[in-house]
Length: 210
Image (cartoon, rainbow, N blue to C red; front, side, top):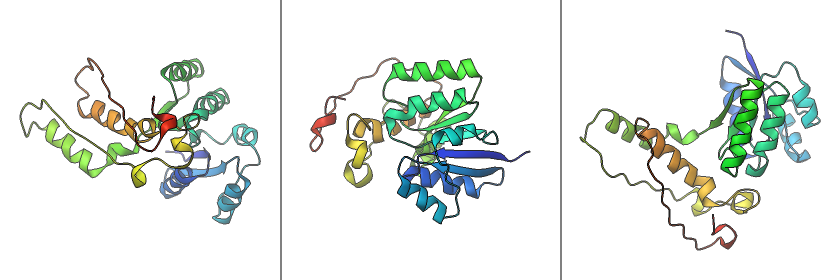
């Protein structure tokens, strides 16, 4: 199997995590990263990682087959579309985008270009979740009629841009998507019939309505 060259757009916390994982994989090679913050590019280079001079330079690199997007949530859509139209397969960090309508547009471009487009959901590999999925899959408890799951998030609430309505979307889009994804994959043979939510907040008035 040939080595797949990958690049990362956004070299923050998650971008750095993806860079480390790619560098550990035998079948992948990290071609480089790009970030709007020059300080992050300097940090990448200090770690022996190539820093592209611009987004356009990254997308023009014909050796790059796969792009991982680890930026603010509100720019996942335009970046993913631009990358797919540049001939790149795309992995987007979660949440994939801010609205269902945006996701429809992204899927349409994936079909138009024939490129892979998927979402990184890292909480599918949490030990507690995998343990309960194994219990459900093997029918250890018989018919399951109620499941409770909760998460307090990183330091209790999402910080920095993640708590902002324009860039992140608050707790529901930061950690809530993990609970929704786990619920769907835990019972992936069952059709979703309805969704109901009661959203409360204490510290984040800006995202209370989400």
